[in-house]
Structure formats: C-alpha cells, structure tokens
Image (cartoon, rainbow, N blue to C red; front, side, top):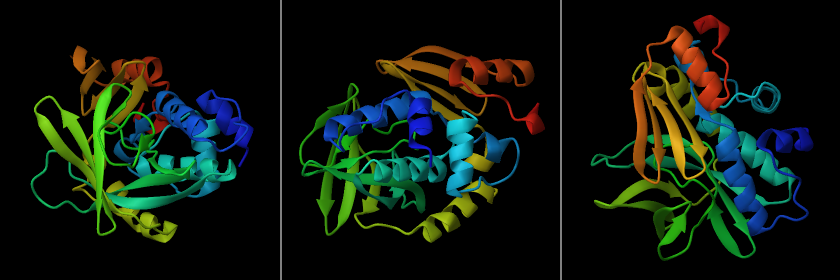
Length: 255
C-alpha cells in the first residue's frame, strides 16, 4: 500500500507517531473525504472486492468510497502500517431496534496511549463522527453524545438522543479474521433482503453535520437539524448530486 497516496486522499500528513491525537485526526479526515456508498452493489449489482489492492485502487486512486467491509478494512490496514495496535470486530447494528439483529458490520478497535478507541469510518448515519474512547461515562464526539459499557467481553455502544439513550451497536471485543468478513460481505452485498441491494445508501461527514442519500431522499443535516431535503429523480440529477455533494462519479453501468 502506498501510504502517502492514501494519506493524500484523506488530506492529512503522515503522523510522526501513533498517538491518540493523530488517530482522531485520521478518523475524522477519512469520514469527511471518503464517503460511505454502495453504488457498486445497488447500481452495478455486484459485491465489491475486498482484496487490499482492489480496495486501495478504488478508494485512493479512483476517489471512490465503499461500505463497512471495504472502508474499515482499508483504514485498518492503514492504521496498522502507521504503527497502531488495532483489530477488527464484527458488530450487530441495533439502533432503534427491538429485535435481535444479525452480525452485519465491520468495525475497528484501536489501542493508543493506554486507551481503547472505536474508529469506524464505514458506518454513516447515527454512528460517532470521529474516534470514540471505549471508556465509562458519556463523551461528546463531534457535537453528539455517546457512551459505552462492557460486560462479559461484549461492548455495547449507546447514542444519546434528545428522546433518550439508544443502543447503537454491540460487538464481542475479539479480533475477527478476514475470512469471516468475506462471508458477511457476500451476504450483505448480494442477498435480496439486504438494504444495500435494495436502495442507494450514501453518507459523508461535513463540518458540523452530515450529508445523506437513502433511496431517493437526499438530506443535509447540520447540528442535528435537517437544513435541506429533496427527492432525487435519478439520471442527470443523481449524477450531479454524487459529483457535487459526495465527490463521486456515477458508475458507467448506471449512467
């Protein structure tokens, strides 16, 4: 992997040491520069390759994004090359759900300066918009409040919303091998019941907020308030939105 090329893609210099401060900078920069997107799945109808060379080409050279199995794998490889002690865990996404949900997410746990951090660049939506300490007590991450609790080796991450505290995700605090994520990605990238095969899902962080496109609904949310929403008809309107708001090109197969 060309580390400097990857760092140029996310707009940060190479850190001099694997510090917590550098980790926060890297995570936030990645969220702002590399969007969560499922264009390959929803529009080209194929599951993305998880080969490291293919991921690097897609994200660093072609200026594309990806979903969790792509982005959190590539970011994990970057962090490891930069000297961080890190591993990937398999999570259940439980936000505003009452029923048990299957494993559907690849996330990253990093140890830096005696603390553990959740550094997730492949979630979008209600997730922390930066590096989050896995430690007792509430903490504010980019203007939003989160907390975590660990019991019997299971980490639960909570989001504190105006209407209450909601369980966001749950994962066992153990490294999961790539082969297991390959299987999970195959399901979520191909199965007709997967949300990613049914509709477009895109997110990109902006200062103070987030841009999203879910199905045909585009929204710009700043400080927790939607300041713009509109329906995207597709075709040229979709192409313009992808380029101007997410920095992406519409795949040829969908044009």
